[in-house]
Image (tube, rainbow, N blue to C red; front, side, top):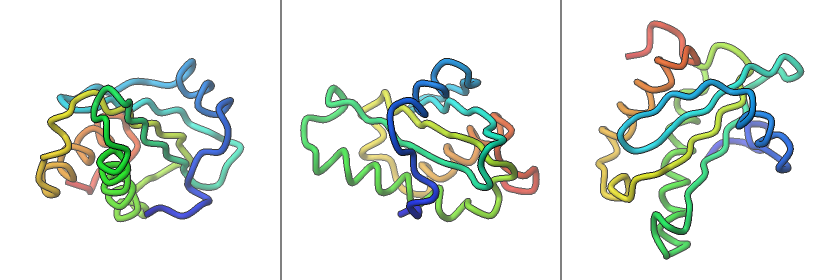
Length: 119
């Protein structure tokens, strides 16, 4: 789980990223990111609709998995970005952790959020 300093607080921050951020779309989720010069570190949010899965337990489990991957990539995030991952595929629930990590790294790299040495 990522620390409290790396989480979003309030809807206005999310609204700003949705309006002004760049989007990178993959097979399971989209990443919207925006550089935030007012902060020292990145912030991340994972959005999973009830349409993806009715069970809150399952949605929260997936959210925790993604936050853990972001925590592991903490040192490779190069600037203070605001990152919003929006899940739009229910197939991500059954995805193996290795594939999920690879996909997140790939999309964060495409968005220019990760350092180049990460593969």
